[in-house]
Structure formats: C-alpha cells, structure tokens
Image (cartoon, rainbow, N blue to C red):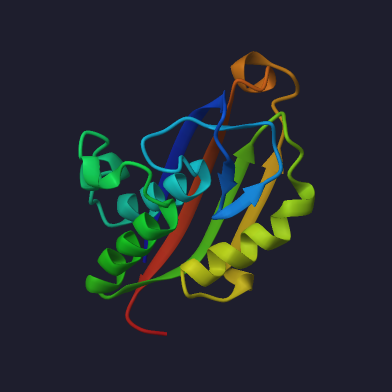
Length: 159
C-alpha cells in the first residue's frame, strides 16, 4: 500500500463558475486557473500522483500547454486514475478537506462525494470530503481563495 498527500489553492475571481469535485456550486465568484480550476480534483490528483511518486498535476498537465486551457479537471483526474491503474494500483480510500469561508458547502457535500466516487470508479464509502471555514483568519478567511488538503491510500492489485 502507498499513501499520497495532495494540496491545492486557487484565488477567487469574478466571472467564473465555481466547480468543486466536478459539481457546479452556486456562488458569485469562481476560481482562477488555466483549467476549470477545480481545486478539489487538483488536490486529489496530486495525492494519487504522490502515492506513486509521479510528481504533481502541473508536471503532467502544465499550464503552459494550450491543450489544457479550460479543460475540465474531471478529465485530468481520469487520466491520473489511468496512471494509477496502469501501475496495477487501485484507490482504497480518500479523505479531503475543503477550506472555504464562502460559500457554505455543507449542502453540496453529498453530491460532491457521489461525483468523486463516480470519477474514481469506487464506492461512496471510500470517499470522504469535508468542508471547513478558515474562521475568518487570513486570505482564506477573507474569502480570497479556496484550499484543499487530500490524502489517499492506494493498494496494489485488483479488487
């Protein structure tokens, strides 16, 4: 078994949709980024890549490459899962914490968990996603961005 840790952070901006875990969130602002800026799926991807010692998302899908401009992070995570499966590993479980002062995410968490489980082709019981505020501290507490920490366990062999 192997453990991976992922982290990502994106700045909030006007004029973009807010996408977390592939789910559109009702918000006045979205996240800035080269892709759709789904900070949750980026952190999950980095955790999976880290578990295999394959670097990070930017190494495999650089923002300097125009092919990835505006790409959905769902596609990127699916490509990362192909790398995981290509090395004969499978996801055992995932735990992620979304840190966002606004918008409140509690009502979206069930849909986000279901969507992430579908993307990763695993059962819902293997996916944990939690939302926390920054208690009004710092840039995250001023709603200037959203950050995510993710941890995964992968195991070798098929289910």
